[in-house]
Length: 191
Image 1 (cartoon, one colour):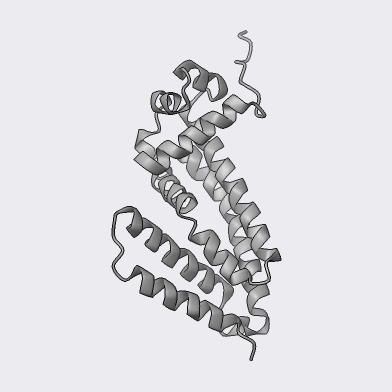
Image 2: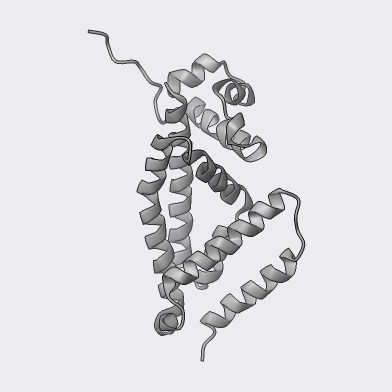
């Protein structure tokens, strides 16, 4: 019986370097470019070292996704503590690099079932935190616009703006962003 394959420590700085390099490749070149060789070259490492820490490409991509999910949960927790939680939620959604990375994960998940499962696992937690932020911000006014509808609007508009910006499209973005931010402010304005 063969001994289990050794995998590098999760606390290793080399592992973190590999994760960061993978994120950079995905954001700058798209998920299809995130091969072991490309990631290793970006990190200044040998491909075999990437495989030492992540035996399969799915292992690497799931680790990158989980790292991103931890960041998202942390940002949503900060939004809950923010005196203007809707603005904090909007700012979280408009984080260009993280939203672009999430769009890459969404595209990739259609081809990688293991990643799709990891994303589904975290989506419930993210959605719950988003609803909590919105309900806290709206208080009694939550009956005017359901929290899940507002969460969908914020995510949809934010992702569309980030995605189009990534394609070099900016027509109407400034005006749309200003209008939407003003509308969000109006939702939480004291009566």
